[in-house]
Length: 385
Image (cartoon, rainbow, N blue to C red; front, side, top):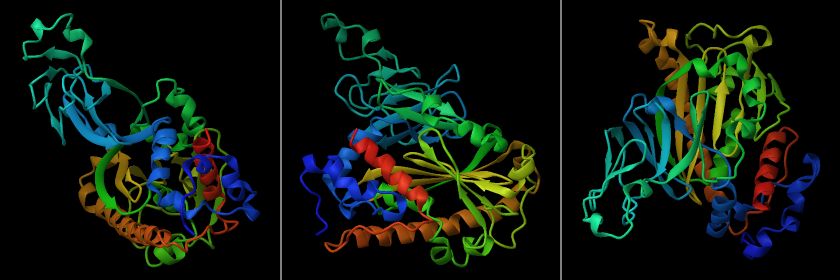
């Protein structure tokens, strides 16, 4: 039956022997790993609060004082660009009584707690505590700033970790920057974001981003007409770092549906890259599609055992954005992204509902699912610590 074993058993190596087998003999993760509240909390503690997680793009906070808030892995956060143009993250919790000091997103000069009006500057320093704290023994403003969260950026993506002893983001990514160097991601600008609430486990959506076999059915009238899986050369790439990747040899843009007119190819591309779309996934949260004329991403934010927030973004060279016909021609890209997002969201919700069946059981991997096998084992490595 589809029931999680005792939690002490769920984190023993023997539980995953079938997943650890070579691809041709391996089974998929047990269905309860997608449906158990208890297992989800183990994942939060052993994965999301230990590794580097992508939480968005720097374009979302373009100017000093720009900020946005989010809950990630159960932690309310503020992300802000300070007056020195540094991107920072803080725990969204007042140092007095714990109230959230900001919500939503916008522009501000300071953060003021709505409960007792403690006020913090954009570097998280407490600058005012109007609750007669001068009468509190040994109280000093300097000791009660917002709690900072480790934050680093790469190619315009914002990453945070709750783990003070975690390696640097550069070490975590390994050779990913070299792999995608031809696409010059750091020179692209995110011009469009969409957010979706999807009723599925985070692993369901993560695996779907690298599942080539569903294209012929789920995307039968969209992506399948651009790059049918059985007719295009797809190869899993060797990777060194906390990511997986594959490339697809396709003459056109994977960011457009068939018949749509696109923008010129990226000026940084040459050689084989001119005919190739590369799609890395930085584990555990973000898929990046690097194609011949732009890049796009899907960021998975776990909200509960059976719910995520999906952020979808599209990036283009600045010179393309400044073209007078950008708004008109970009609609073709937006149509593609919106269409495939709806298709993927719907099927992932169907999969999640099927996994809740008491009769759901592990499946077997196809020889075309090498990356999904790698993802499962990356997850197990961290669950077993």
